[in-house]
Image: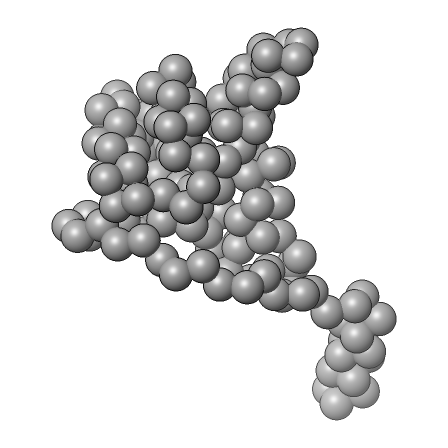
Length: 135
């Protein structure tokens, strides 16, 4: 855990290709059971994030929910600060899961995209009501 958090501290903004390569190497040093579980979870979270328009769960939101379950950082002010780094690490894993787990050889940093504003809840309800009428 210390290595993951130390890596995040050294590059808290957009990751460099070297940073992602180091993160990938760290992930691949995990015991097979831990690696397999982390890979499965992160790839699932990436799928959830791909439907953020419908479920309102962005990679950041998912990392806030799941980060404390993946990295246990302790109590107090220091634990809270470490939790921020761990959540950022989980977010980075979700965003770059194909590079970190998919066997992509060349590490490329994605261009930053602007956040997508979620649709209002009332629009989702209206869509659902239209679907019921159509059926």
